[in-house]
Image 1: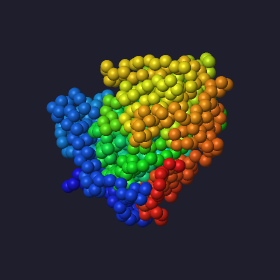
Image 2: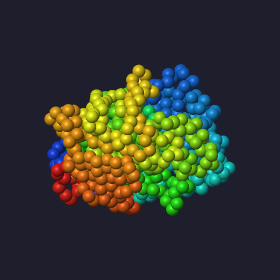
Image 3: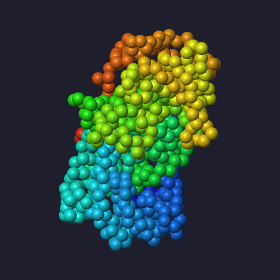
Image 4: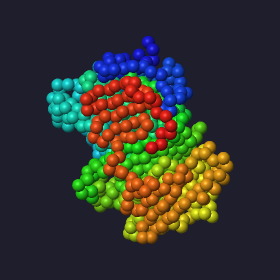
Length: 635
């Protein structure tokens, strides 16, 4: 039996049958670049073989992580890996019995536990399976309070009640019957698919939480008995992975993020999303994430178009998205989900990605960043960004239902940097950001009584250059990305030891002025005959006018000759035309396109078009009736 057959049979999915039902028209075509020229892509057989070889590496690592005679260690995914590989039956049972003595983790317990239940349904002893079933009566997992929590919770409830239908209310922890739990879970899942494909995700584009959106959908693809639910899950996997692919650079999730942890905000290779890129595309150093084995178990294979979206950086392009804030409870009259306007400029050497600023997500928001490509990004801080380290009960009260006076204390128990003046994550109501291609303008108008009345810019330990210039610009180079930063108010440098790389030091540009801002211009080293020195000369010659009184404002002509204006509290302009945020699409770019409210995503690469139509629950893979795009993809 081939590796592919083994995974698909274990998932219980006849993927070929599902796809035959979903695809009314399917054709094969060689992939060409969007410029009409061939892009070096691996041989299709080699590409798929590489995916399953990496899958075997992943599974064997977690199966072998704990010796079979050590019953004191190992988690649910170690058990899953052993079940997939049909190994260590005695250890699986003994270790599972030990873990079930003290269930914990709420919805983070639910998704690995239900995976063990399905992976082991034909291998585990009847007594063990009965014990597992009874935990759904005796243990009460908390549903949580975030989008990923609810998705994990309801996907697990859908699958466990599908496995045990027609059981009475007293056999479940929440006092509802199998039928009630199943219908409630089904209703939530369908509503989440509709919400995501009409106005976007709330926990959008999170490198750290990407995995817990992939996993529930992979589980539903693998184990749901309803073909319609399996199809929704397959389409959502395509949707989420395409969204990730176009904003990734060498496997790293770039751009503006709803949620990212402190280390991952700096060391951008470290998040969970990179593990999925390694497995699916093999375009980043090995990153073993246990949850990614669910894709294998679901029989999910990365298509040629998905691989190309993630790996073809043969030209520069602009990609825009509209996401949403999570649900607001207070301090946002009439607005439950404010729109989030994302803009990403991707090149082979670097990515610049922004959102518009403001309180778009509590605690862990990353409003914008520059990322540069590295051959080996491990233990490297290949990013630049600016921040106002805001902390307030208004922010927390907007998104959490607890008593205002206790929210900050409760949050900092787990998110320890939230109330720190030196944090590198978080949004601010006093920040406004605007981008056009490789240029960014970040403006700040901070109220005098704000808890942390200063702004900061992160300059990495891994920059090749960092120079103050008499012109007022600060010049830096990371990889082949040339970065110019113009601080709009006086500042000082602070040398800070990297918390995770002992003996290495990052630099903080600290500016304690309430009216503030930064103008940033990024370009590729290959664009300048004189390299770094040529870039500096070109930037010094640019027309730049800044002011902080009465409000921060900028007028700037970029390296490509575009005239940008921005004033705090006003709509920015590009060559005299106001940015039309009201017309921002759900996705817009050379590869992904969707209208707000449409529930339909069109994915294009070359002459291939892949359409995810959630409104009609239809997936099509077709040759587009058009010629390949030509010329630059910047729009």
